[in-house]
Length: 128
Image 1 (tube, rainbow, N blue to C red):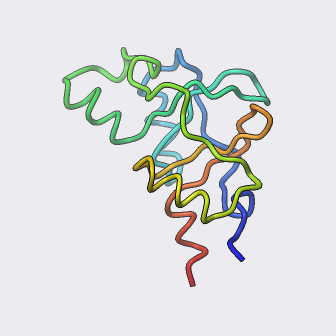
Image 2 (cartoon, rainbow, N blue to C red; image 1 turned 120 degrees about the vertical axis):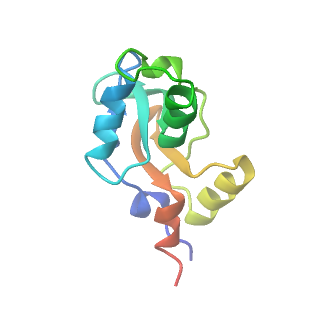
């Protein structure tokens, strides 16, 4: 039986508000081995506004010659609605969503609130 998303996801999720500077997102991601931050608002019941990945920062900021100290994450994020998944979904359902949408990260949302994130690397942990 496939593992459930809630058993594989990471939490708490790295988040920044939409008005955060890109440099703040970079610093947050560099505090651990994370390739993205979720752009969210709303305290503990965070409402997902978008996602910023390291590759997005590279292509939208550095390759464009912009200053990460001056650019807001809202200006470069992939905006909501994002493809998300429920914590009760299976690892198979997560993998199928990632493949269908050609993505490597899925915010885990329950009753409209961000509760975790599952990545393609997380899914590899359940392969034996």
